[in-house]
Image 1 (cartoon, helix red, strand yellow):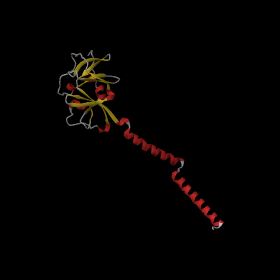
Image 2: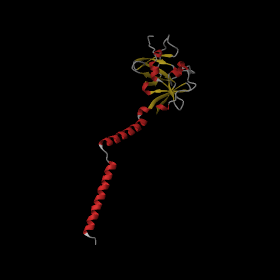
Image 3: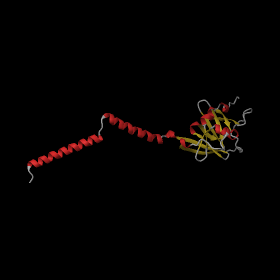
Image 4: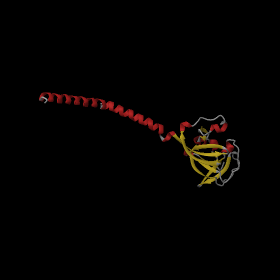
Length: 202
């Protein structure tokens, strides 16, 4: 049978060990306010980097279409409407790449034929052609498209700078080329070019 003094001594040692263990836990997992704030800041930075890698504005949404046998695309943010090519009225005295003008929802819109503008092979028009209406605060016009392929999102940094065969006027309006060799047009540059500003009374 243990003596009372030995039992009390053991309990004292056990309490001291528990107190020491608790102190070590506090030191390891607790921090002063400054250190605690730094840890929070570090975690916030790590989270922000993670969000940066997947945030929506790291993607580019494209409307793709065909011109002859070639694939083109433009950012959907520049596209105000897509509709079957309506009846158009030719405008005499305008550049050859101006197909004419159309009435789109009460607005008179000029129609540009990029096949002529980019010196591409030209096929005849049909009831399967489409009109892409590009629009910003200062300008509005339509682009003729042979076929609409659809809308897709790709990483913005996946666009290539260009291809060897993309020279001349096409290169001037190039935003980039996708991995599938789709030529992505710079909608802002097209809309900002005063040479493409055609009015019905010109």
